[in-house]
Amino acid sequence: MRTVPAGGRTGLVLFASCLAQFMVVLDVSIVNVALPSMRDALGFDAEGLAWVINAYTLAFAGFLLLGGRAADLFGRRRVFLVGLGLFGLASLIGGLANHPALLLAARAVQGLGGAVLSPASLAILQTTYPEGAARSRAFGWWAAMGGIGGAAGGLAGGVLVGLLSWRWIFLVNVPVVAVTAVLTLAVVRETRDESRPRLDVAGAVLVTSGLVALVYGVVSLESEPWVSLSVLGATAVAAVLLTAFVLTQLRSRRPLVPLSVFRIRSVSTANVVILLITSAMFSMWFFVSLHMQDVLGFDALTAGLAFLPQSFSVVIGSQISSRLLPRVGPRAVLVGGGTATAAGFAWFAFLTPTTSWAAGVLGPGIAVTLGIGLVFPAVTTAATTGVPGGLAGLVSGLVTTSRQIGGAVGLSVLSTLAAAHTAALVAAGTAAPVAQTAGTTRAFAVSAVVVAAAVVVALFVPAPRRVEDQEPARV
Image (tube, rainbow, N blue to C red; front, side, top):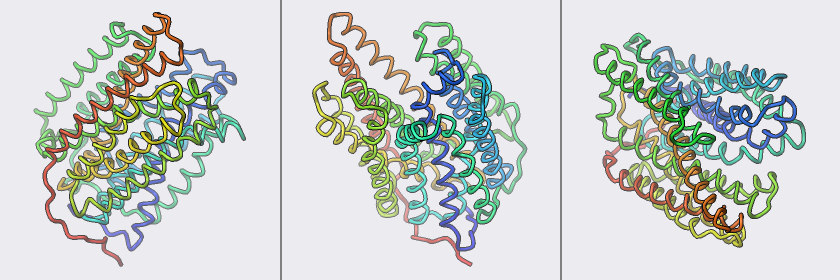
């Protein structure tokens, strides 16, 4: 793949890309702590309040593939700046919203901006850094920002709501977006697919609608049973639309997603690995947060602070991964990181209501997040190595879509499984803390099995080819 020298300013390119990724992931989780304040200020009912989260998730997951392909076709820097603009404007409107409908609309546009930003930021790194140690280090930091953003949401939300107001969880994005945009204009060079194909409009409509329907069906599981019309109807619509999308891609002369990309073994296996691992990973933040607050009695700020060791572990794992990748290749790192994550979940499965945070949460949490830190740069490297430059944004969108869909499906399925087990125990007369912990540990045991399956799939990632340790060209 042809890379574009950044005039000796590749560190600033990396900083801009990582800052955007941090914002996108942070805004998935930062709203949780602020939900009660939003409810009181704007008069949300319980169902409407859930859509403060779901509106973002729906737009983000639904438009990722389109956002990644748009970056290839129309220019990665240009699309990145459009995403920043959408994200910043939506954050401003959300922070000033005086009606529930306006806030939900702002959250949906935020998700759309994130769906453009995330794959474009990764594609910028892929086309800036040549294959080798330099790209591995860049991917390591980019992956670490995603992990830190997910872990820091609770803490950042608690601090902003406690010291200022819920509005600042949105307004704080505005100056960050402005700084990122100025930096991007100064240091990021424009790249795009040199063949300049046209956008496959029919494919774009089908895949976006299909993914939105799929995620809608998944998030409906949080409040509806499996056999409800909302879940089954949305899933059926998603199946029809996504099947039609595949058929149109097979017949299209300029497909939105050339299906031949899945014949690249590293791409297909890496996407399966990240789909499985994130289906377990997203649930960890959810279950551990509930356990610390409902069973151990932590308040929101203390629970946020208790996640700090896990945030550091993600960073440490990502940096170890970026240094190992040029030497041993992604397969070995994926297997090692996945094994650590599976072991952490298996350790979590022995949690009891009387186990302290230090004895029952700290150790397995570090094992899981250290493994995740190892996995994320490796899976990104595996999915993008050897991919033609014109598909950089598309492949980046595929990886991010797999991660988002895996997280949404995993969280819904595991939380439903845990809730059903907890409810059965409570009905049988078991004390609430014991029943809740039993539901949580069952979910963790299933997570351990799912991640172990991801390790098996990782064994099929192609062995590394020798790549010289190149640094980006400097002027």
